Length: 80
Image (cartoon, rainbow, N blue to C red; front, side):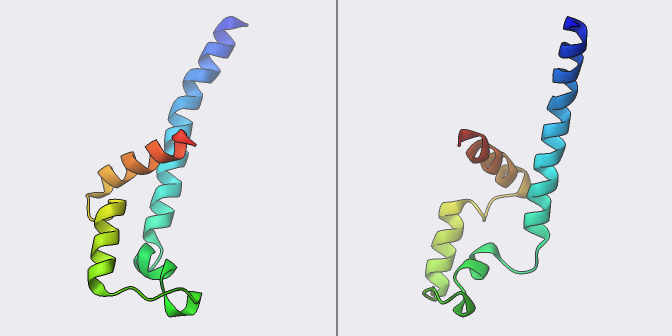
């Protein structure tokens, strides 16, 4: 019984990693920039200037490579 539980836990680790990669990639494949989707005129929120968008991208880490964005995202996801 103990081996069964250990095997299941060890199989759960790559499954969780795979699911998080899948969710992250689906969110990144959506058309448009995430910030432009949030701060668009259609959303009824304030419209940011180009400088403000660049600052927000840098602050949120959207200017970093995808693998670093993924690591930051998973760190924030599991910190909840």
